[in-house]
Amino acid sequence: MTYRRVLGGLGLALMALGGVLLLGQPEPWRIALWLAGAVVLHDALIAPLVLAVAALTAAAGLRLTGAPRAALIVAGSLTAIALPPLLRPGAPANPTVLPLDYPRDWLLAMAAIALVTGAYLGIRALLRRPGGGPPHFALPAWGCRVTTSAADAAPADGRGRPSRC
Image (tube, rainbow, N blue to C red; front, top):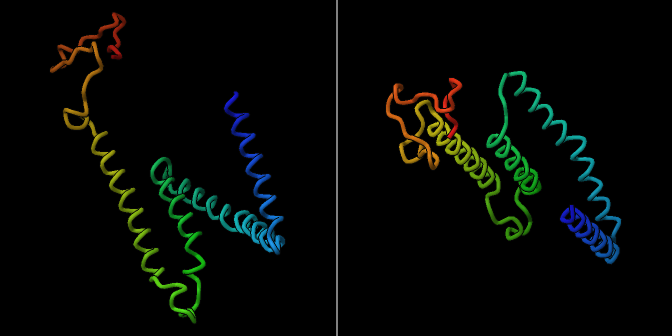
C-alpha cells in the first residue's frame, strides 16, 4: 500500500508543477483551452469510436484481446499524433516546416504495426498448435516424467486424473 501513496504523492507533485508552469505562461488560457479541447475530442469522438469498434467486433463474434487490442491502441494513438500534419492542406509556405511525406510515413507505420502484430499472432498460433511447438519449447517441468506413449502416461495421482507436473 505504501507504493500507492508514493505514486499518488508523485502524481500530485507533478500536477502542481504543471499548474505552476501553466500559470507562468504569457497566455495560460490558450493552453487550458487546448487541454479542454483534448478532453472534448476524447469524449465526443475517440471514446464513441472505440466503443463502436468493440460493439461491431463483438457482434461479428470476434474477440479483440491482447495483441490485436494493443495494435489498435498503438495505431489510434499514432494517428491522433499524426493528424495535424496529415490534415494540413496543400504545401506549406515554408518547405522546411513539414519536410517529410507524412501520409506515406503514416501508412508505412500502420503497415509495420499490422505486420508485427500478424507475425506475433502467427508465431503464437504455431507454438500453441495441437501437439505443441518444436521439442525445445515443450520441455517438462523438473521432476516430471517424459512419456512417449499413451500406455506410459498412467495417472500419477491415484484418482484417475493425469499428474499436473
